[in-house]
Length: 319
Image (tube, rainbow, N blue to C red; front, side, top):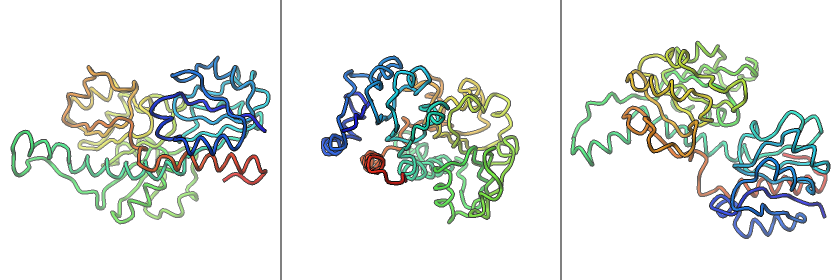
């Protein structure tokens, strides 16, 4: 039997996404080494444990498979990530060594896209603020500027699986879409007649709603700094469900404090969001606890990746 390293520590994540029946399925695939700590592994611990592994099953909190880790893992053949993006999990050397990488990104993406649509509508309609007006301020009727999504200008920064599902969900709203993604060609948008490619500057200045869907990499770190945030049109709604570090958060705070734009944030540079963060005091930003991908169907992601592992062990094509 092959050896499988399962990197997730004991705690809420493991209990939620890997209940006992899922672990029994996992143990039927090979000899499983469990994370012996009640915390995420360090890079050195990952390297040590991966030294015995043919497959690594990962989730949130796993260190990156750097060249240092890989040097200690000569048997590693597959990294199976039971969550979304692998951009900050695997290094170029993983692919250079021919190690297969699979993830539950496609399963997760549907849930995240659904949340993005909800966040956009909540931001445009100021739904939480209206609830607060009625419950706390005992107000009736709204003096707030409530906007419609129908026919709106939507700018996307990055277009991966989540972005594509989002475009499908947005079809009834007949939005106009401009996308910044340097890895796409115009032909790749043939299924989306209302979408076109544009520069980052054009997307930011044009969009009434700008939603971030890029992976966090060295080239996207602080992709939106003070200059880019200032270029957003007055009244724009900025939505981030990607990674907090894609935005310079200090610069975003200053822009929000001006009252010129609005935001919905599900991710932050530091998580959990510090209690003294000025973002908590602003009425023009909605804050969520990195929960866009959370749903009552989270186990589906784990089972999807276990299915990939089984196909790999049987020599079948990976999906």
